[in-house]
Amino acid sequence: EYRRGGYHAVRVGDSFNKGAYVVQSKLGWGHFSTVWLAWDTNHSRYVALKVQKSAQHYTEAAMDEIKILKQIADGDPDDSRCVVKLLDHFKHSGPNGNHVCMVFEFLGDNLLTLIKYTDYHGIPLPMVKEICRHVLVGLDYLHRVLAIIHTDLKPENILLVSTIDPSKNPRKSGVPLVLPATEADDPPPKAPAPSVNGGPTKSQKKKIRRKAKRAATATSEGSGAVASGDTDGSDDRGDLSTANEGSPNQDGDNKGDKGTRRGDVLFDPHSGDNFERDEDHLALMMELLGMMPRKIALGGRYSREFFNRYGDLRHIRRLRFWPLNKVLVDKYRFSERDSNDMADFLVPILDFVPGKRPVAAQLLQHPWLDAGPFHRQPKTLPDPTENSVDVVSEKQRFENQERDA
Ligand code: ATP
Image (cartoon, rainbow, N blue to C red; front, side, top):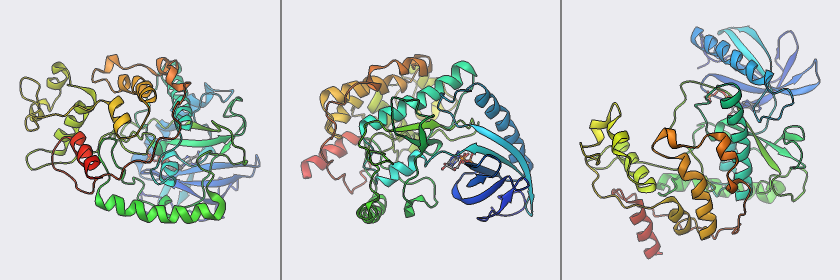
């Protein structure tokens, strides 16, 4: 990737834009760029410097992105909309070509880093709600004010700031939430995660155990302040807030990387002897959400590959329905009340009929964001099964494992 048309090799101490920015350390990287913590010598502040790959295609994409990012920043002069701010941009020429560079306000670690940091044990429900709220504030702003659709919403694209007083504007009082470094911060960026109604595979479990050991060490060195997210030693609830990173890429994957409070993904489909992974994905969706309306099932370009004319899956015939509110009680040990409240918030978002899904503004009114929880510390979860059972029913898998335990 570090060749003509690709990334620019950046070293700590390098300066950009005639000495305006001096690189301090690496913050992250994506498909299109590397991102660096830099010192802004003109304004005496830290910034995030994003150095784009140099091929024409990336340059054009970056120029489009800059146009949109400018609109996003201009529409939010009081910095209250939970979107990252573009501060500057310029071109930098190097051995691999000309690289568009974008300068952003410096925000903290991304949400995936936080999820990994907890070893997929998840983050406290009040914090989940607060993160949801700030993401929705950002989305509502993009949708209603600017008519922009994000299309690449995922934990890596949600950057954290820690606030001292949550009653204040989170962005004004926020400082970047930077977690102590762990090996888990290194590539690959997409870590394996178990699914909501499935369990981790053997290799995932091995990795998780290895990381758990490392995290235990990190915690014993006094750096385990993640659960409350506090950087100032206070024990405030809700002292974490997010900035929804507004990078409106058009070609992001939309695989279901929707972390729940346990850091599990919502669906983790597998192929079986006589069915493909995509068919399993459809089956998992219907087991959680009920049958897909026939019109939707049969209205897609590839419908016939997966559904017969009645709207039933071709190869996976027996579905074991396990609605989200039951999953939360049975598997995640939520109280009935917490699980119903959360399902009431989440299930409409997942409606098979796009027009029926609530918009961000409606979700911001949902009582779940403010309520409870009434059962803050769910019991430790049972160990998920090691066997990857080649049948569709995740509920069955879970019940077997409960019985064996
Ligand atoms: P992709 O398109 O693959 O998601 P990208 O090349 O557009 O990636 P980003 O996702 O914007 O790059 O950034 C990569 C990583 O750099 C982020 O996940 C985050 O960890 C870090 N990062 C980006 N912007 C900032 C910022 N403003 N403050 C702190 N860290 C940042």
